[in-house]
Image (cartoon, rainbow, N blue to C red):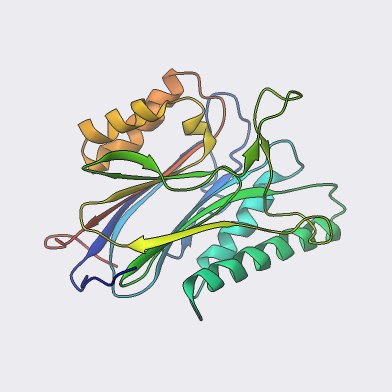
Length: 260
């Protein structure tokens, strides 16, 4: 790891969520720098765009409620609320690990209180600090980096392919009693570089667009158009599931931009 001078750097962010073609409710939630989707915006579609100076820690995250469980939308909402309250109070990786454990505990507590047999969510966190970026994911919600080298996945899918299911099975999620399974998120980190873009997205996008299609749309559209183009292409391809996207673009230039 090396440190870089990013006194003037900002993150431009574009957040969106679409219910998809077949879902009756949106079980996805996102967090963009302390703001998260609330129940009244968790409907057909939601957007949130902005720009923030990297002189502090800034959190972005996507949560995909597990559809095979009861009340996946509650699990993802609890996770979003926890992430919106997140504060780095120690090493960022340790802080993210504490956040995952706290979130898991709160989901399990809700499950027990209301007699729900099972509820859970995946999670993908991207934490910008004044010098570095930290990634944490639980489950299969993906994070990509896009730069001059193209599009690459930097998260790790915590799944397994079996002969008994046509889709990969989750090995990790939030909402599992710790007596049953250890919460073991995937972590990575590195320096923040101007010009890099990051895409956090639920599988409503990645199940219906190939990596090549995603890269082409990012390459050929303006930053403020990418989410809409990705969503519409996924819908054209038959996306029945919720489609949630956060695009983060790191830049040195924050002139003529409103910043938080």
